[in-house]
Image (tube, rainbow over all chains, first blue to last red; front, side, top):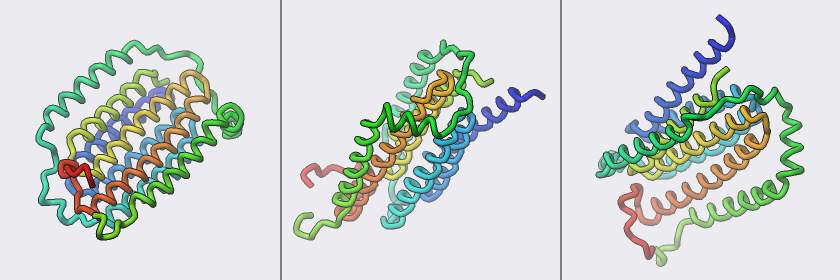
Length: 169
Length: 100
């Protein structure tokens, strides 16, 4: 068995498991279970980045998503009271319309990407060094703006989540 | 070698699942999780374009997109937390009070 076949088998495994994990994030009843499925989903996406010679992105994905965003989700669920969860219905009334919208969207995108051609030359295994050079020379201004955005999001998150005094409710 | 098409189909499938979940679910936190799924789908397609074009720009855009996704999640969870704390609202169909 030559290596491309093994690569394709792994890709098909990732395809199936990513689809099922994202579906089970939506379908599962308990919100903690959806968080757990999201964790495995993010780890699978991080593994998929390894196929694409993007080791730096894999590390960033694990650090930021699994270490930051998912911990944020777990803390938010912990702070809230989710006991009243079970009285409510999970899905909205017009869920069928949402399914039809998604189906039409997928058909449209599929028609768009159907004729994509695969080029012969691909990205060679690169050093993180090169990404750093590109980030600090050509993309310096977006990088600085991004740091400002992070600062604003930090301050805004604290201000919004603060408990209001009683007379302002 | 895996064709570019497969990655694009994977990305569009995940994006569609996230979109349908965002429309269909009522729970605000699960809606934010569906946003994360959509962000990841777009990141996969960015990285695959970077790989098949032999250019590093796609990876840098994934970096920016991950940072913006982290900001968006922090702000969204702060809004949900404010709603739950101040008005005892946890579902998207209960947000009916615009004036606060």
